[in-house]
Image 1 (cartoon, one colour):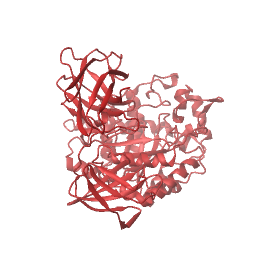
Image 2 (cartoon, one colour):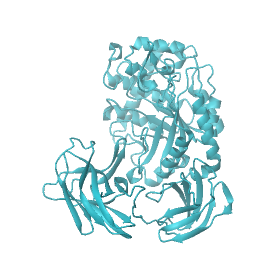
Image 3 (cartoon, one colour):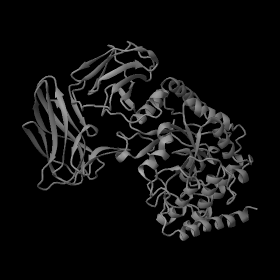
Length: 586
């Protein structure tokens, strides 16, 4: 029976391509002509949700990180790739995939209890195994396992019952079981060889059509790892979004399609994304996405809650992963943490949902989210480090404060006073919540926040990080991401950076610059009338940083000084600048 299914899939794919050909003048991307207002309306629910559950589940939960008695390094769902397991041998694991304890209603209730608003599940990961009854292959849960039932339909029904939106992850390029599917680094089994264009036409296109049409409202399509994808291959898939008007998709399709969302993986970008790009950090609770029986390196509930706060304060969403077992159970440490997050969210969810990014560049004790009204703004001050003296400074806040209260105790008004540096709020001597307590500060008008000068730390040093620099120019910019936290694209020698800093007592300081370069360009550090010229060492790579002590400066006490880093125009060679550190000279 499945032999005819592949033919039917090819027919469906051909129909899609024929339709695209007839509409040659029409852009394939359904959102190419979308207005800003239309985009805002489409993204509204997602931006307000802020918190979702990622589920990585499949046949890889059977070996659970171990192959032939050997623990395989890396993430669990990549075990076939990392251990170079032959196709025929890997397929035998499906005979042990029998999730008889799968309770989709319990999964959805757990997500809802945690305060999550949507779920994204791996309908098909890189091993090519489908969690649904696909009509174009027998490598799915219905045909290849003793369980024999579609796993996505009951999950879709449970989401509908509990008001949780459902999205599907789909690996459109990498597929290590079907001939022609891509594999990062190349194939290791001749059974994988084939024509990738044919694979896209006969497997990927019809399967995406299946998941978009057979499971009720689908809110998100989460592409992944566009290995060997080009524009022509992506063009076969992008029109399928029209099957679900309003669907949100990410930036991992390939072929030059930007998608709706950036997807930082396992890290939180320090400043969000420029230009108002929507983004979502996806992250594991331990070290793996797919289940590994021996991965017990669990993040604490404190870390998970503070990650959620940090992400919301930068305007992003948090997609937090669970990796169920082959029996269909979410590991108990995940369940425990999600319930603890839920207890915090029941009190403080108002400070997460439908909030936007912080107006503050930095806060010494935590983070801020906000909600803007027609005449006032509500600032949610998330305090990680509770002040022992009961005085919470809000540096740089210039607005008139209308009211202040604890979110956990809304009936009690807190006192505040205006200072030269902003506002100081009088808070209880102990925090209502040991992980993160929220002070609600309502101010008049839109936020008006001054950038405050940086001051010395406990050891007397003043650290001027790239994140806090004022950038003067059109090409240089702050770069963030995994292993990146620097000012880069510094190709124009007319452009420069600077920081305001304040020293309480006058003194002499060593200037230590942390940078990377592939040339030997000269630059100057300027502090008032003092200039120190230096030559950047060639570190061999723009991602390889080194620290260089270039001299000393004398800084006055009780004054704001603006320290600049400027290129020397003659022979300028770009640098990536991570920080400047001023350490008291010995």
